[in-house]
Length: 146
Image (cartoon, rainbow, N blue to C red; front, side):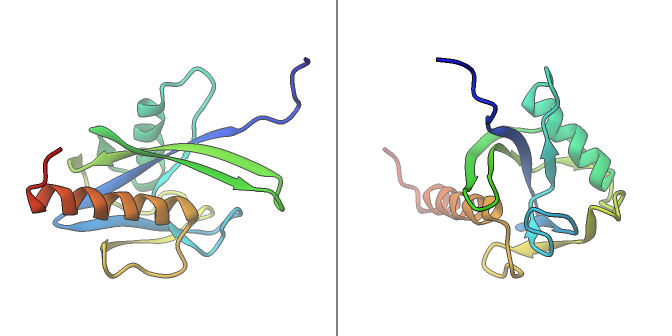
């Protein structure tokens, strides 16, 4: 069997939490232009995903992060748009600097939002990540163990 000309693209994102709020950015470009989403972007060839996340967040928002743990992997398939993205999302609860927009052609604004008070519309990756965050926080605070 030969190699396919189609293959998934690899993205990455960061769930940056501070004082109980999640950092989101509003996208200007497709896919999902006008949607609020996690900061992040494309993983470059031979670049470790954790390094890509740190680079993308620095480029977009000017903050320095250290990805703590892999939170989830979002598999986003858009048959109509003929796109397939796989995006690991890292949890980040510690960063250096104050966020500021550094890519105004890609992002129109940013904000901090409580998990139960999200803006609309949200990107698909953000919806998945918020569900995982809510589930993990519930398990953490309820004292459940397996």
